[in-house]
Image 1 (cartoon, helix red, strand yellow):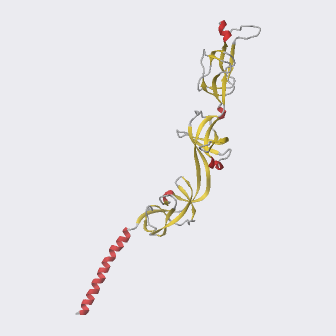
Image 2 (cartoon, helix red, strand yellow; image 1 turned 90 degrees about the vertical axis):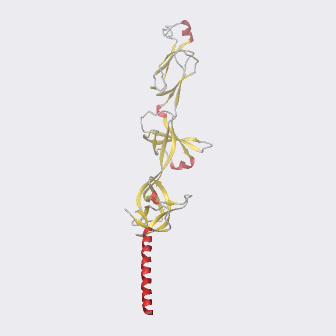
Image 3 (cartoon, one colour; image 1 turned 45 degrees about the vertical axis):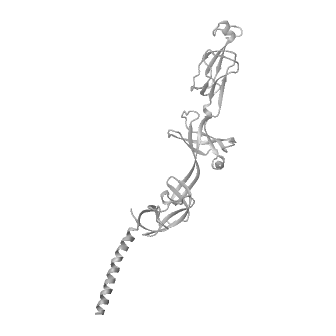
Length: 304
């Protein structure tokens, strides 16, 4: 009878072990995290500097009275575009006003009418108009301001530590508040730096005849770094610690196992990030989704 008991015990033990193996296999399958993967790509990546730029007229011409008297005629209007030589004001001298003569010649010998004409000294927009018909003005008194259209620029306040990235005639993309984009180029650098902000004014000329008002705040984008054929991954493939000092990716070492691989980032452009090290092979599979919170060595399941 004892051999029978022994054989029966062995059979029961084997059945119990077989029954325990099934839940373990099911638990292992359940522990696999579904992920999607990608591979390293060679991309052209560009890093930009984005700085505010304010529209401005660098050159302003001041229209002044050339005699003491009364404004007899005003042809200027705010915002009006005038050409060099256009008649803007006529001034009747106080003597002519006192006599009561209009523009008739007072003295035919001297050909003096008592009315002086003031013309635009250059082309541009009238941005200030300080007097109207009938006003009494002194000789040399300012009547209007003409902003020279040819001197129109966007003034960019560039942090001085970025000065090495900006050069004369360098292309610049200007984005207006309404989303319109204009091409421009670096025209000149201001000879002073703001004491507190340590920024230097940079003049950007736009390659457009579009009429833009003064003091408009736009965005200037300048190419800081351009990398050709840079090894890159999608941003979603890059993981980081809370302080954003350490970065890593999850790389598959076999169809169901991913390991943590520290990486060193380069420039970022759009949704791509340059990987400076290590050098991944074109066949290496990097997890791009489902990677958040994975342990150093994790069981995964690749899905399409």
